[in-house]
Amino acid sequence: MMSLIIFDSNDIGEILRSKLGVDADPLAERILIIDRADSIVINVMFKSGVVVLPLVYSTTKLLTILMIDNDKQYNGAVVDGVSCELVNATALELAWVTL
Image 1 (cartoon, one colour):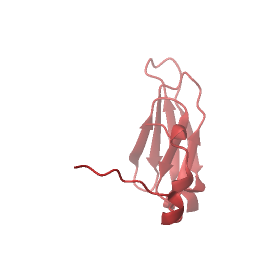
Image 2 (image 1 turned 45 degrees about the vertical axis):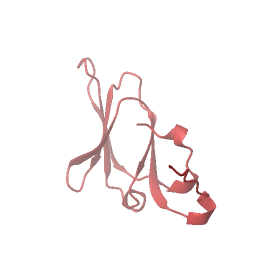
Image 3 (image 1 turned 30 degrees about the vertical axis):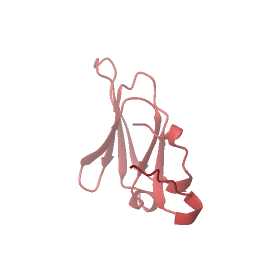
Image 4 (image 1 turned 90 degrees about the vertical axis):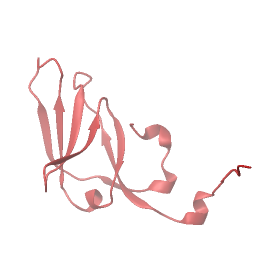
């Protein structure tokens, strides 16, 4: 028999994370989120949206955002030194998060 697991977010307290909202040009078909400390791509988005990242990205300016189009019609755009918003992950609305 399977049991349904239900939890109340008030019971687990705060889980602090970084929230990055990206509002890119619709022609930016790929949005790469890069950790500039080690040049590792930590996320790839295919449209504007919100991504939840580890806490360290709220307290540093370690992110570089690279926006490119697949057709190579436009030059890529780069935003460097990005810092995220500090949020309580248990209170986030999942509809915000880009998968």
